[in-house]
Length: 201
Image 1 (cartoon, rainbow, N blue to C red):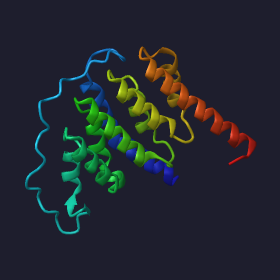
Image 2: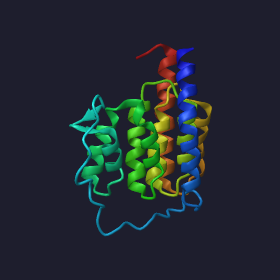
Image 3: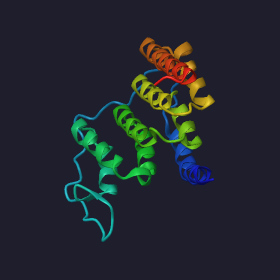
């Protein structure tokens, strides 16, 4: 019952964001490879972050809101540092992570999906997050599709919708690298499931 209650609460929190993310996604068909042009330079990081309020959780002396903003920075080092920081805040960071997953910039979406994967690894799959990830396998950018597939691959037990999304990428994605990646994920899953049936490690 505790797991069901947590899932329901998380679903209520995430579904509006998932809907908004899908609505804001570029209208190009999956695999079109259409990406937004990158600006000449990354936006500047927050030069004067507000100090945390009393009792507020922090990482390196800065609150969650600061690190969520930094997840959108186009400088890869700052963005990756922010993603590492955000992971330490746990589930409270999920709404901000999902907003980053809907960024107009593919490389921001990729890192945000990877961060989402860290937070969902080794936990019972949440239906709202699985639906969000399945939708991300239709992203116009091939790197985003592969990252979404990798996060789905580690949902345990693997939901039927996740398996169907991986099979669709393997069988029908227009990009050969995406097809190969999905095939490798499914092959690894089959090996793990076979070992589990045999009672092996």
